Image (cartoon, rainbow, N blue to C red; front, side, top):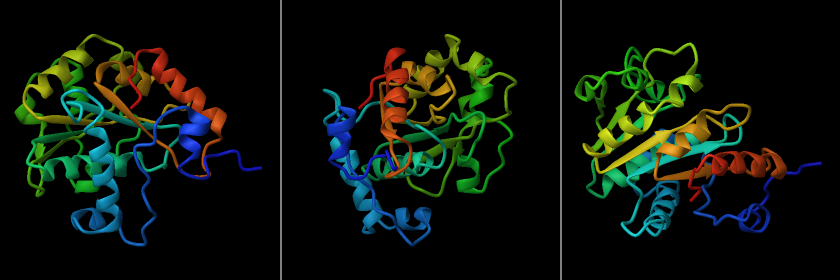
Length: 226
């Protein structure tokens, strides 16, 4: 039996959290659809961005993490989408690939993943040398960089919060594409350091009890689920 989320109203009813929005399936390449501000996909994410504007007293959170229960639920696409939508409002936005085990942002932009976030976590303060500009106005990216032997150990250090505060000082908004929660401590650790977490749920995907358990893990370490 399918024990996942079936409809938008299931989110507040079964998970006890507000629904920021729902995103339709598209037959187009999502990255291409997101470049068109009038596409259904862009409009759906613009609605979510509008909901996030009420998340804090100063509007859209300065640092925002996105995670999900398991891989392939749309987390990275949603991270890219929100970064693009926020950048279109005239803000400077940095999209960070913090999925140190299974990076994807460099593939989205067709760039090499030779240096990036892991370099900052291990002590580098050379932000200019680790950030890559994109052809999208206002949007810059930071790939994961070299894969560390123990990502959880790296993310559990005090350096993580220091790095994010440093980046927040340079950009209006920092969007962090986090790993999925299932079986890992990485996303809850990242949730401690960002101002808010957006949780992505695929319809009829992970069972409700698994989603609840994952959300609880993020909240248990102090993550603010928006």
